[in-house]
Length: 172
Image 1 (cartoon, one colour):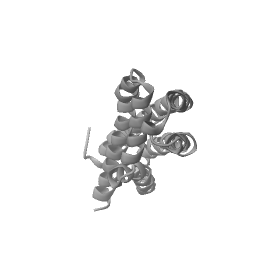
Image 2: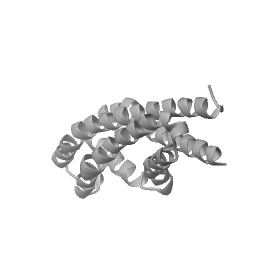
Image 3: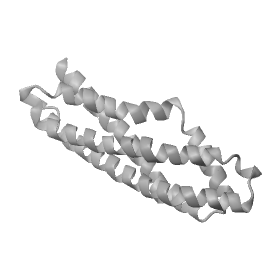
Image 4: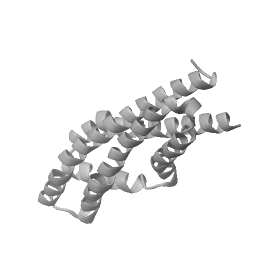
């Protein structure tokens, strides 16, 4: 039973981390480049709507579930017979922690600043250009950091999953 709980928790941590890494990756390679080609009004309006829409239970479940599940699975791997996966789980948690720090200290304040300029439809061209200039480059740069750190965290969890499977006889 203990192995089943440990396996399920590690699997869930891996899946939720993968979902978040994929979200950040999609923004880095598709959403932001696509919006970069759009006009200021479209860019500002779209990002304002995205930043509102993403505040939902499904996103929160994956975004905060990933580190919580990683902590839980690390704790479950403290036993000596399965400890080989532990360094990978701790590394995953540290990497995801960087993404959390970037999100809460940089991305969210940028989102809030963009929201505070008011609805894009009521702004002048100069106001839209200024709002975009303050938001786009730093948000894009820090989203790339989140993409890289959550992807690296995913890789660490996958390595932990392989090691866990070898130690428990449930994998390669």
